[in-house]
Amino acid sequence: MGTKNKPIRLDDDQLSQLTSQITEALKAQLFQREEEVDKRLTGLDTKTDELEQHNRLENLRIFGVKEESGEDTDKIVINVALKAKIKLNAAAISRSHRVGPRAPGKTRAIIVKFVSYADRKRLFEAKKNLKGTGITIREDLTMIRQQILKKATDKFSMQCVWSNNGVIIVKHEDKYHRFKTMAQLDDFIYETL
Picture 1 (cartoon, helix red, strand yellow):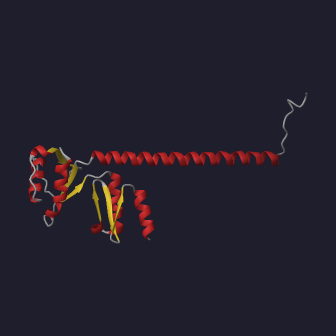
Picture 2 (picture 1 turned 120 degrees about the horizontal axis):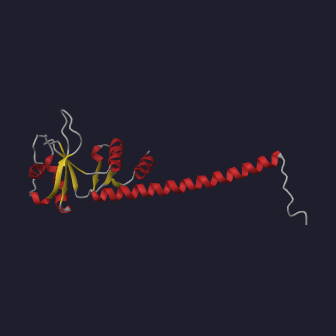
């Protein structure tokens, strides 16, 4: 009858050992939880980037066109298309404008959003006709995709790396490899070492 409320007595070593076991168990749980949260955050970051890139599918960026005050960027886009040997009309362009801050001696890029993906695709595919003009057309990539493109270009050279529909493509040893995340590219770089 008296054993029910009998206090548990531990010496210092037993208390220290019990405290250590509890601490280790809590650390393991915390570490597991942290890994789960990191995995979910990475998944959310990837999904967010995917959605942002999808929203940019109708956009292109045009580089190398001299900037003038009072310019009409829609007309510039139409003229660039003519130089690329395709015909576009103003109705094909949803909107266009220069991007980035003005800086002396620096020409800002033009971003153009097309009404239809088909018109955007025609101009993007015709960009090869602009060689030697100083004008370059690139996809409107998210910051993450730009970083992937830069890292891939630094590693594999500009001639072997490009983007298509927001996917970074690397030609390596006569094979084409596609990347949407930095982790995918990092794994590939590690495999090629």
